[in-house]
View 1 (cartoon, rainbow, N blue to C red):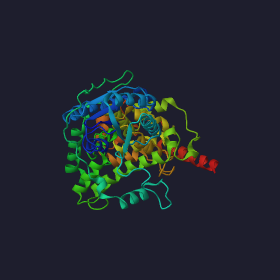
View 2: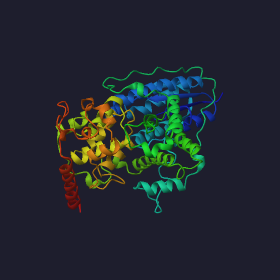
View 3: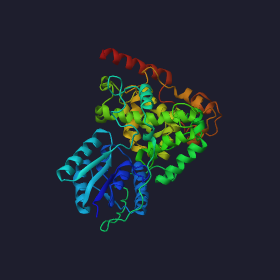
View 4: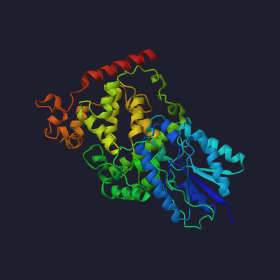
Length: 476
């Protein structure tokens, strides 16, 4: 009888188009799946209860999906990454596993964990098989003419598309059902560990790859062709809302891009503008993973542009609390922050607006916002979150110039002209008309329950520009 294959699941919680799982199943013999729950490590990485709850609910669905394929899922609880090698090796020995299979991850701590696992398994005489799965094109395969990693997105996208092998976008089927191993049964999914709190509406995010695929199909069939026109308007259902599923791997980037190809006559860079725009957003996701891999200092809490490590950010806990709680006096900022607290998610345009408001208008350290997002987001993803925050704070790759500061009032009037999004999340402004709702402080009869602006948009913008200019001058 063929030896057992052990598949280590991480942020790839699906059976369809799961590279390590597909290859392990093709190797023959029984397959055992394993997931390592590391709550201490999650706390160290600022992962909050919303994302962890979504992960546990997805694991429950995955366990059932795997069981129908004859693959038991065991869940280990080693606590932190340092204990993962010993825990996995113990399961490998207990199941008689011949090989361990897993898909690569790219933040620094995850890479160190994986190296430690590979070393321990090889020392024990158990082979390790690693695969590329969370990106279409592995870090190190998209390089400049000087064989260097890209630090600007647009040329990265051009090279990513130019060198793409269409076979890389072909999703793989789930393994066929097999006889389950005789001595291994599925484990139970743990409850949410102590210290993690759930604040989102879980009903908004049904778990599992079936739910993810249904949402992808609905988006592609109903809204993809208008994505470029509607994605910036938070009152519309104009985005895919697939980021939670991509972040934990209930859906793969290949499945998404394959759906674009099918809907857009086999093209990613021409054809329907909505399809091209969404494909570009998926390539942005790849770009940030390449950056994290090529420049590990961003995983250590440093600014990508190291000259900003000592930038003189302000210390103002009251302003930070007002930002977190959605009481800055700027309706678009406040509505977005309240959406985050209630749903565990925020519209992409608004992520940029609130990040720039914190780092520019309030001149507060972007690390604080990055951490708050990770604690609240159901789609919390280090590479994308870090990349987006550093772009907004002008400290990262391809960063917005420091003098680019979104005016929250102009953004509000442009992207929520009738105030529909504002009224949904700020009921105290429900009675204001479409003009007054964007800037209630200027209109007589401002609701007493809504605060006045904590900073002046124009003055605070200039303060930020002056601070960045002075720092740039000092750095030179």
